[in-house]
Structure formats: structure tokens, C-alpha cells
Image (cartoon, rainbow, N blue to C red; front, side):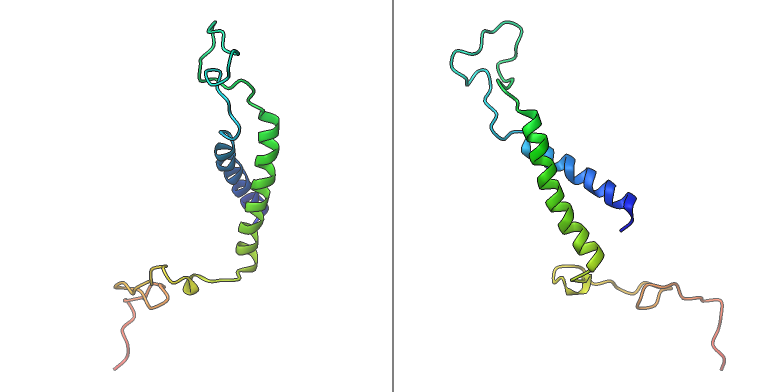
Length: 110
């Protein structure tokens, strides 16, 4: 895994994790007793969003998930052939068993 690929994968994992963490602990103004005055605020808006805490939790969780992805990518403890539900690659016309193109312009000698 290159440095650029590692950073890109981490950013994707971080954003997905952020969307999973955002709803944690949210209390809307409608649910909070006596804190919603109805003046210019949406009743579904959170009373205290706690964004800094959610960003820190997201960073830690994304680092753990990214570490697992990096380990599998770099160390390769399992291969695609060892996963039972992965489809088996088949030969197509003009390819050998490994998927490499076969040159049809060369005819075998008789």
C-alpha cells in the first residue's frame, strides 16, 4: 500500500465512521423538556451536538478500522482463493487459465 492509497483509504473510512457516530447521544430540542422555545429553531435540531467529542471518537475508531485494512493489505494473511464465497475466475476465449491474453497470431508448428 502506498502512502497516497493509505491516506485515501483512511479518509474514506473516517467519513463513513463519522456518519455512523453522528447520531450517538443526540437529543433533539423537541425531545428536551422545556429547552425548545420555537423561535427560529427546528424542533429536530440537537440541543448539544458534541461535535468535538464525536470527531475524536471517529478518529480513534477509523484508525482501528484502517489498521485492520492496512494489515490485511500489507501482510496478506489470507488470499482470495481462501475465501469460500469468492467467485472462481474462468477462462475466456483468448485467455489462458491465469487470465493472460493468448497470442492467436502465432500458429503452432506441425
